[in-house]
Length: 120
Image 1 (cartoon, rainbow, N blue to C red):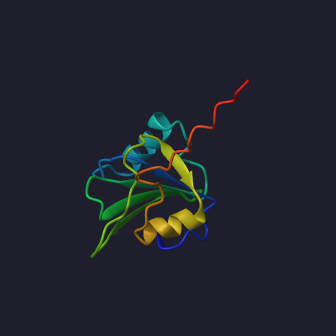
Image 2: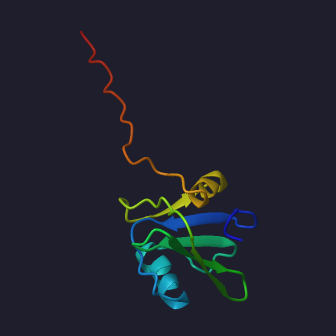
């Protein structure tokens, strides 16, 4: 279920660290109060990662109840964005990259060179 993004209208990741000891109510409160998003939005997958990057939790409202998903990798780790402390929506392609262990946010962003100064 977590290997592809089929069936999800949106995938939103909580960048940074999340205490994965939290359950459904704790993760829903993070979504509502920290990120100002609606945890009851149907078919929206919210993903969380703790300090150990080999495991993630997902929270999904199915219309009649929450589904709590937990995935722990045997080998490897998720390349989770840590520097931004906000929720960000990702595309289904970025989701597949994340599940395959690739970076979805550049570690060292490429900055544009300032445009040349205009001469009078």
